[in-house]
Length: 125
Image 1 (cartoon, rainbow, N blue to C red):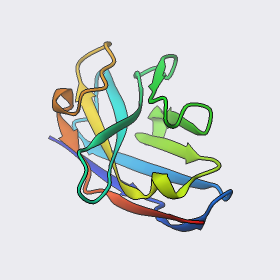
Image 2 (image 1 turned 120 degrees about the vertical axis):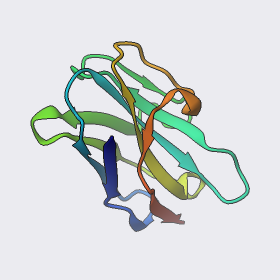
Image 3 (image 1 turned 90 degrees about the horizontal axis):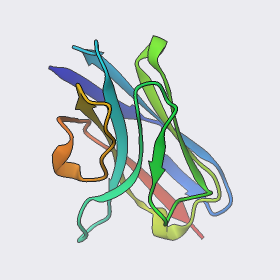
Image 4 (image 1 turned 180 degrees about the horizontal axis):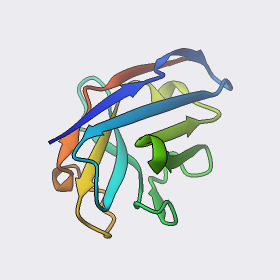
């Protein structure tokens, strides 16, 4: 089992920056990719970014490319999402997820094995 706990959400204004963190615990040995997703009220869960275990490969959604950056610190079992120039459209609950025992990246929520409880991000104009 792997437990994921997100933190760092809150209320920000357009143009501010925000960094989300996701701490993993439990069976965190071996290769595991990490991802960030978000879900706004009335909408489906949306892929944001994913990163492989070494941190050398990433994939971003077009909607956040150039504004958000995913990174990880394996010594601390933590993955980050740096959100620069957030917009009101970025308002959502943000979730991190882990995909175990794979070197392949995926953007599909159903391919991830474990999920955090989510952290609310609200961007005001």
